[in-house]
Amino acid sequence: FPVTITSLQTIDGVTSRKLCTQNEQLTVISDGSNWVIVARVIPNVVTSYTPTYTGFGTVSTSNILWARQGSFIRIWGAFVAGTVTSVQARLSLPSGLTTLTTTATLVVAGTLGRSANTTTNSYVLSESGSTYVVFSAQSGTTNANSTATGTALVNNSETCTLWALIPIADWEG
Image (cartoon, rainbow, N blue to C red; front, top):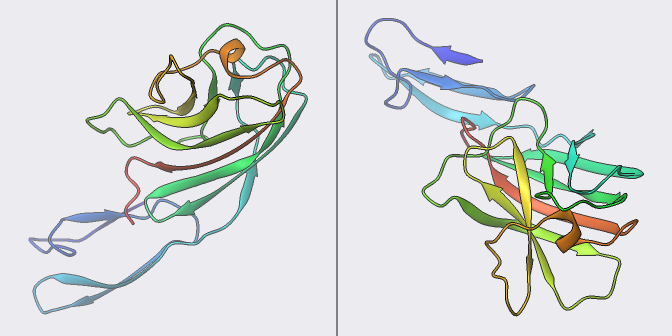
């Protein structure tokens, strides 16, 4: 929800500010010609959601949570993969959210834990300007910024845990 002012006034130097999450608050005072932000409250409400999984097959159990943390979304939880496929592994963000557009196409944003014993390090990647996150499986021949398919990432019926902190477009912190 945009907070806009009239005439030639500004709020901390800009013509509008956005309130992006329920119960977010902005307290402003006037200096006589413009408005100054004196307080901003961004609620840190933990919410569960059911993401769309790609590459993980039909997920049998999903317990994914999210909360806003300033201009980032924090996502964590666990799921059990189905019959994994050889397409890029993805997990959708909550409805209406898009990752921040950055100069780097892919940025490591978190980790993916696996129930299987492995020497591969698995990461959550924030893809610039996307409505989902992707994953990587770093090994001796693959770097952490290369996306992975479901089959390259996890085994069928494997339990996975994840934690990520992802910058979100239009969220002001």
